[in-house]
Length: 126
Image (cartoon, rainbow, N blue to C red; front, side, top):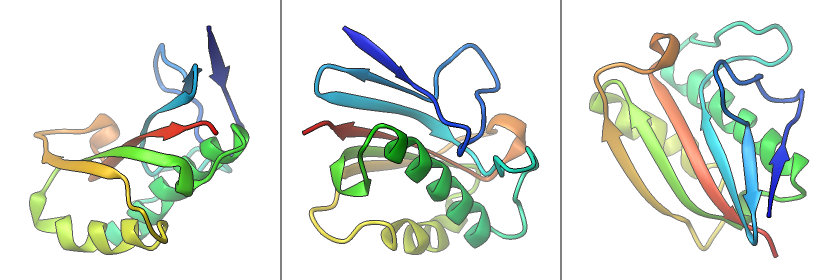
């Protein structure tokens, strides 16, 4: 059985997908980009602020499901430029305290809306 998770505190999907889907004891959160849910605008001031916005969006979806970053077991980071890895990694790390999730980071040629970073996560529902 699956349950769709939706919140107005994160950007609405820009295609035929859900913000998150709970399937059994797992929550699959769709990739988030730096859209500010309050005004629908991209937050691309710099890579650090862009990453913070992505993480705030992920946090909002997790909270809607009654979870936090402590529940995340896997994440995927997509970058348009691997040269920004250290800045993204620094910001990303601020949202986790211990028992870090498994992760991969990949460079891609282009991301939706030409953003610089997109992150998706899988969390465990306990």
